[in-house]
Length: 202
Length: 202
DNA sequence: TTCGTCATGTAATGGGTTACATGATTAC
DNA sequence: GTAATCATGTAACCCATTACATGACGAA
Image 1 (cartoon, rainbow over the protein chains, first blue to last red):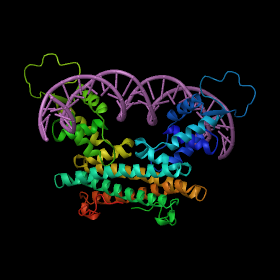
Image 2 (spheres, helix red, strand yellow):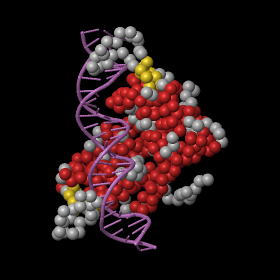
Image 3 (tube, each protein chain N blue to C red):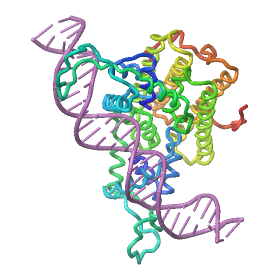
Image 4 (cartoon, each protein chain N blue to C red):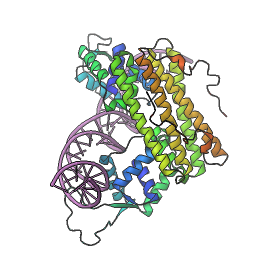
């Protein structure tokens, strides 16, 4: 997951870890909280060791005598290698079960414009099936327990069901546009054009 | 998380691991996939060692000579101890940052009827703030990138924003009922009464 | 000169997963 | 008698988190 996102972002432009994290936060912000450094840097190291990214010599091109053991200086700019591009393409093409959960789907979707059309369709349909299963489980739970459950559990399931339904509808629209060979049209749904009251409550 | 859910379910009635998993799946199905045995059983062991649950002698009350090293026989019925009840009460009362993410909130909400009113309110408000932050991040990202991003990334953010907005509205309703001293009223929103076409598509 | 933010990293830990292994009970 | 499902568990692993530690650089 992190690996995929990092390769994808570096595919667009080289950057250093800190910047990467900010970009990452923006990209995955719709479905996940920020990534911690404790996972970012070790991952960068792993990717470097795998040969998918390289450190672009930052500034002091010459002397680099014995870097301090801790608290590393100067920015390290990372850049995708040819192998890294291949790896990214590989990840782009996969469409297995991991691709259908919240996180996997989110990250794949974020790079959909680089994904080929048939893979896009397969991912969207797989995701839809996944959500439908969740929905069916909730419908079942609701019809089974009806009356026997407390108001809060009931409300949680009701809300979960509503969200699942909505998600399925969203996916249906996307699948339809895919089939028609069109990119998603932002205009069909509520565009966040005029949000009158961004902090408005109580 | 697992610990909390297990204690909560055993609070309602004693049961064995397999049954527990089914109940668990139903309870958390609205926001999370099923729990695996590889995490369930070790957790049960931990809870037993902590003294929060006990194994209720299943059936063969007498002879229990040298159980086979693997493939354990007979059901093991778990039951909450007095300490376990205390522990559960402790978990019910907490309302920290972990309580506001998807999973933490979901599990707390599922046991809201056993949570006292002021804690309920604090959790709902904390959760709302969390979602508002996500929403604000998305609004920012959308206004910043506008036009510069591809259609899919844009659509992902748009959809994320819409979901966040909806979630905030839901929480607002819940908070309002809490303040009015009422349990959530299922009737206000779409009740899943008449779903005409549960499998209806293409 | 001190504070905030930029910037990089490690160590310890945690909470899960998949795959494996075994066996009892029930329905056909 | 055999297949499905009920039932319990271990081992290896994975991916991430928090807390910690260090230090450069710009602005007040």
